[in-house]
Length: 329
Image 1: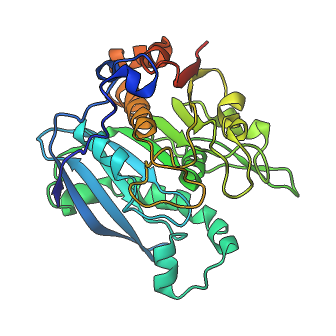
Image 2: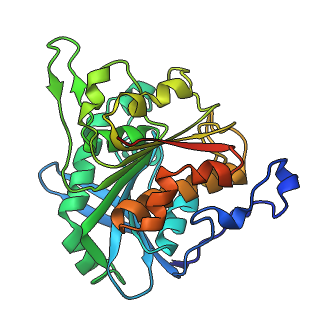
């Protein structure tokens, strides 16, 4: 499947939104220069776990080597969501790989497993091995996926996810889980990703305590919104931002979007889910822009992107509708 990046267009007039900014001035808001190709269905075999991992891959049709982004979906979701983000990144020169994890409603129904929410949450520990399988298989993917040969830069890798996918991503990034009985910490980190995108991550509770986030030392962007309530426990954005608040000083960033719900206006695509909130092209664009800024800064070493992360330019460009803060030392 060959597709193009479909732009969520912000109103050209500042008065249309009641704020003063020029959308053209926001970093990476427009579609990138590359036509993109999508392989909607590819399967990776994991012999050790006796499972098949379904993948969706989206990447530039252009020649060259491009950084990799592994993106993990929310609870009960699948590889076939998040086109507004994935297609945007690919058009700007990234190979995007999306797995369908075992908690996917599609897979659970297909296997005949009785659907219960507790079964969904119980599958959290199957997700980090899915990510490691993908990272272990990059050479195989280059060889076997039509159109991908020679396009992966194996030295530049990003990891991101939304909601339950953010939980997966932060574990890969070094966030530790504490056993409530033994009080010992368990780690799931993988050294290969260079930067992490956490959209609506999980704060303290259950097996996460303040000390859990001390291992999150690589460049990380946390994104939440003032109406971003957890569909599981009802906690608000203050809980979501705890990942940022408790992480060490350094290249840690927080984007807080005024009025954004858990679905950020439609980052998953047209499909809605409980708590996702209404469609909002403005919020989608803020997430697309800020996430691309993270990838460009730390997967492409782009000086302009780093400036946007570190200098408050994002706040000014969005009329303070989206505020980007940093824990720079």
